[in-house]
Image (cartoon, rainbow, N blue to C red):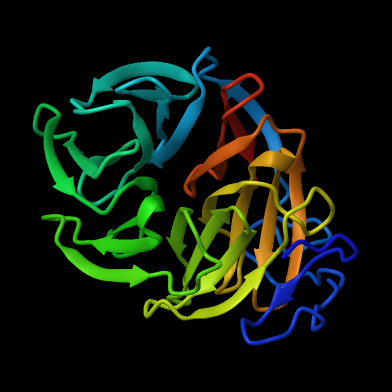
Length: 305
């Protein structure tokens, strides 16, 4: 479905297309972080780094260390205070042989790297001479994240499925089939504080879905487009804000970051004019938001909040 005459769509899955709700003004809420007139932190661009000719595929953060992966590369770049501090080489097999996304749990001192267009998920142990263990996942691991319990969340694009893995041994804890026929090729998934999952899809419906672990759709937001409240190839997600079901979205095709509050049925553009943002990471202690650019300067943007 493509709708061009509404600003934003927040809809329950059972509702008819005519039951669209137009966005209301965002109401500020109490927060422990600085806010502007909205319920979200004010983002101030602090620095850029990691500019390179290859496009960024994914980023993640562990403390003040940021990990970056790119197209046509098996390397994981490591940055601290905008300086390149090292590279890890992941021994991928098959074609095309580069890393699709990356995630890092604090407790296990490791990083997870997905094999682009493959069934491989690599666990790289940072404490034991970069020892790598290969886990098998449904094809292909397009997006990775970790939960508050350090579980690994994998969006398997070719199988229309989200799997949640044990961080210790890679065993499947939960397999979540995306049951609706109009949900295809999930690009990223995160578990929100409420326990529900936010999932981004980029075609034919360019939407953000709120989904239970059973696979049941609670709500969805957006339609394909370039206007207010619309998305075009949404990609990376990050739990964000003070409410239980708030998520920050890389609206990649529209070159902006959009915050969605499913509880209040509201959304807001927090940053724009970004060269195709594809991935997000946050350093809570130092109050920094990292954004990876797929296009443009193909660098890492660092926002202070």
